[in-house]
Image 1: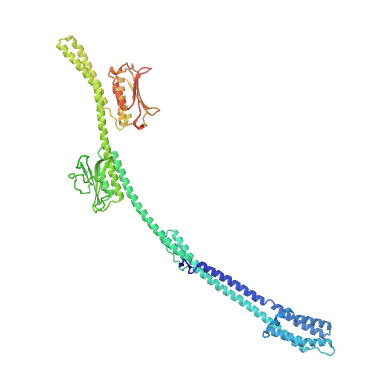
Image 2: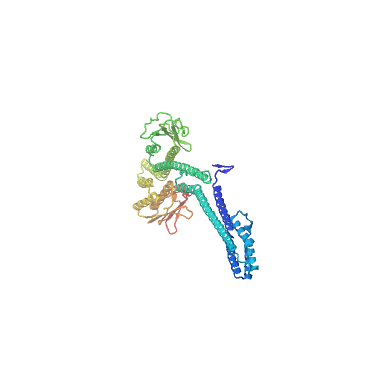
Length: 604
């Protein structure tokens, strides 16, 4: 179709150029032909007019001679001579004698010059003796009439020739126009319409449409390019459609995996007070991964070589592996299992291995990437759940040990001292019995009774303190419960002012705060002899937590730690656990203030 060296074999631009040149050439030929034909007839009318005037002048000469008007006749003869010698007739004299107009003109002129004029001149010189040559005049008139007819016939012939040229030019123009119109319609109009239709259909989404532009010109090349472009666009569209479908499937799988992982994470996080239902999670995981996959979970300790827990989906029949060693399973085979179809995903966190998830492909079909990522994520979530469970167990152990230490200290500082005092009184009583000092026994018995009463009261206070707990209502709810208990067991009006609604406190901080408030409030009720107790808990400008416990009692004596067993040492011990400062002093308006402040852990 196209040759890079010679160009198009049939160029549309060349065809249009040739057509335009042909039209212009035909127009020029027609114009010049008409100009030539018109130029040929330019003097015919004047020749006819002059030949007609010769005839009229001949009549005038004959009439003047007949009237014997010699001057007039001579004048007319001279005029007639001039007319015969007119320059218009010069080309008739130059034409060959075979030409009919020239032949008749020369014959008539010769007859005038050689025959009629001498006779007329003789008649003018001898008017009396020479008669008018009527016969020669008639011959001259006949010859002149023939010249007029010949000139008229020649002019009409030229006019007919001009018309023929016009008709030929018209037919040639119509023929050339028809040929050019047909050529343009065939080689330009139809291909352009096909290309326009192709562009419209491709624009409407028919990317595979192929146009049928034939030929070997530019439009044919353009049609070929459009067809190639259409094929390329269709292929790209198919590829994009396939990619969109593939991405849609991947997004669906990822969405299913994310929903499953979200549900699993929610189950794990909501199971902080109970055991995680691994059986339910494995059943759901088997449904997400596919029916051809058999999944099992093995959990084992760091030192053991047998799993302490083996779980498989309920719809899978997998032999119990609790009797075989875990050394072969505790290896991640998520990559090296492409041929065997057996995958293992270790459950580990911070270099601590908790178990393994085994996946058996019945048809040894490799797992897809999203399936491997899902299994790895589930293994990581299991590791996180087991790690959290281990940390919670450790925290509970530490909290239990810490609380036991506090209980032991409180027992030592209160009940143990009371029992030691009672033991001393019992020794005194035994000695008085041995010495038979009966008069000393009654005061000892009274002191024993008072000591037992005090010890019993301290024991009840300790039991009340040990029973304190913080439920789902948080610190505020626990403090309200303590205040209600204090109001019910004493005559003091205890009021709580709690302003920590927007601050998060750790469980340890809440327990120590509750115990400090409980201990300080109980001391105020037992020893202040006041009527009102105000508990203020709020946040300072430096974001530290401030606790104020005010009573309107008798105030605090010096060396209060050694009198009345206020338990101030216990309060100071708990304040040190929170890295806080405690100050116990009298108030100017009367009573005692316990001031405690610390910075919560969330600010560190």
